[in-house]
Length: 610
Image 1 (cartoon, rainbow, N blue to C red):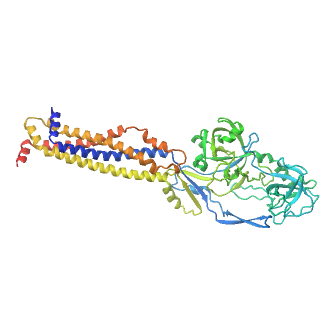
Image 2: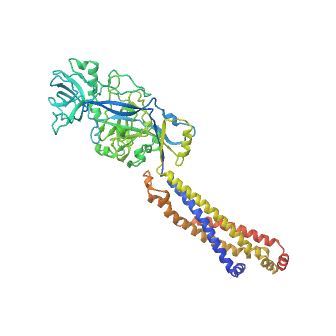
Image 3: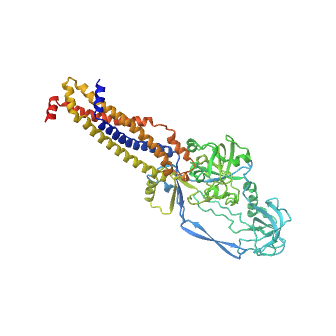
């Protein structure tokens, strides 16, 4: 009876009632729209946080540019090249400064040369080393193409044999020594394009063999210091006399001959604490195609596990779960495997130490294959993976490589990197710049997260404005209509009390109607606002702040759109928003009724007459 009476009173004020419903619907819809944007923004940020990664690459700037003069017998002049030169190498420890919070790294990756003749190298061996004994047909200074007759092929391909005449030029020596007919010389040869202006070349044979120095060791110390070698660069060949191979130089040549099989069965093994710190994986040029990545525990504990290329696996019949033996001969602390092991050939690494001996194996372990990768490899690009490259946890190498280091260099973008939390680039750079290190450059890659974060931040600000505006409008509507429906209805309350209704029944008579109106208006407004927020976010969200052209390949636009599509109708968001508005309306209207009930009925009627 009380509820019917309350509704009847509202029907007598149809204009006010409809206006209240309309304004409350708009206000609660505006509030719910902002809340919907906030919820979508929050869920998207949580989803994108795992899909994006912020990587920093580190490169030491060169102190000077050094000119290199290479003699070219073809033009009878020096060719001038330039290369970066460093007074000293900045250590990796400079990245360990106060306030630097890394999720992974920083690391300066080392790659190892592993020798195992059991495995077939994808695309064959990458070395073109040739070592022969030859004699000139006449006394000659080989500063131009001359003919040599091969007397022995000590190391080389099958298209070279004893008795074959070859075109020879000491192409890179500005002052070559005389070669004498009847004498035998041992030399390492490199096949290269010949002199175009030399008449003795026929049209279909414009290649020549040039000597290439391979006896000098590139070994460096454990801190990158140069180690002295008795063989100097520029020793292109030696005369073979009786007992020559018993001398120190002869023994070095013989030791070098023992590396023939090495150069055809050495493949690079790179240690890392996170494969995504390697730009090939970060950029999507390489990816795990079968099996799995390393786990955090395997990185941390240095487990003997590895990732290999699918092509290498097919060539050797290897599968996930198999073991592969990795005997490490040398360590390269300067270059990436991608810069050394390319399809255009391998820049030959001298495999002799300063003692003139082959590098001994410093660690020999069996690694379990846990996954395989596919992608672009072997382009002789420092940021790409090399041919036949194998990846291992860096801590899995237990023994020291101090006596087997063939190269040492500065931090390079292709070898040195780290991971930080998404969205913290600006904060990191502020702290880094305070270190005052000018000759180290850091470049960040975040897969477009910065652009995404800016768009999401704009959406967050918009949602806050909508929420505040909605709240203000809701409170204004509730306060105004509480005054209109309740406080101004004091005469009605006085009459009902004079007719014998208790305060409780009078409260219910006034409260029931506005409660029902508030419930209907808030529920309808919140449902409409939530649905509208998803339609708007679905239309502009992915297009405006998620662009797959900046993606690192770990998330797709379909996945981004699916984040909200799977939610369906936002029931609980609607319920909680409507419940909050209803609670606020109940408190405000209840306070207004309480004010009415405090006054005596006759006083209210007296004020009305006055």
